[in-house]
Image 1: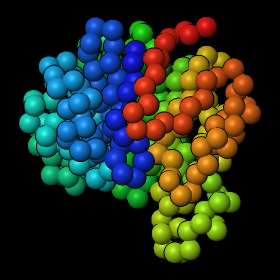
Image 2: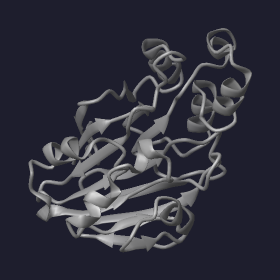
Image 3: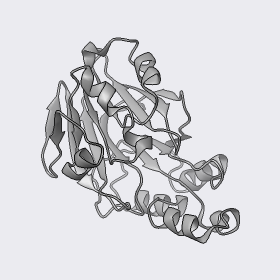
Length: 240
C-alpha cells in the first residue's frame, strides 16, 4: 500500500492511498486541483472515493472538481451542506464502506465544526487510523498498525509564539497538540503498531524533530515520520 501526501498543514491537506492493483482512495481534497491531477497521474479511473473530514477549505477546496470526475464524495451531512457539495454520500458512524479491497469507517472528532476521523483497513496494510483537526479523540482503537495523526503545535511553544489571544485560543481548542497526540497513542492497542505519521504540523508552532522524538520515546520499535508535501511511504501489514 502506497501513501502519497499531496498536502498537509493549513495550506492544504490531501492523502492518497493506492494498493498494488492501482486502486486508490483519497482522504481530504484541500489542495489545488492540478496537484490532485498530478497525484493520480491524470487518470481518475481508479480513484474509488474521496473522504472529507470537515468543511474547512484546507480539507475540501477541490471537492467539486473531484465530483465532476464521477468520484463519490463521502462526508458528514453538515460538511456536505457547508461546502455545498453535490452527489455526496453522507457518512454514518459504525457503517462499513467497502470500496474495492478498502474498508473505511468514520467516527466523530472534536473540532470547531463537525469533523470526522477514519479507520481504513486493507489486506496490504492492515489497519490505519486517520485523525486530524481535533483536540482529542473520544474513541480508542484495537490492533492499530499505522497512525496518521495530527500534531499541530507544542503547548509550551504556542504560549510565546502566538500573541493574538483569539488565534491562540482557537488553535488550542480545535487542534491536537503533540502532548495530546502522544498521550492518545498510548491509550490504544499498539502491540502491532508499525508506523506513526504526524500530520498537519504548524509552520510556526511545531518543531519536527522534537515531535518525532516525543513519539519515539514511548514507541522505540515504531517508525515515526513527520509528513511533508510530497512525502511517500509504503505501508505494509507486517514490515518486520
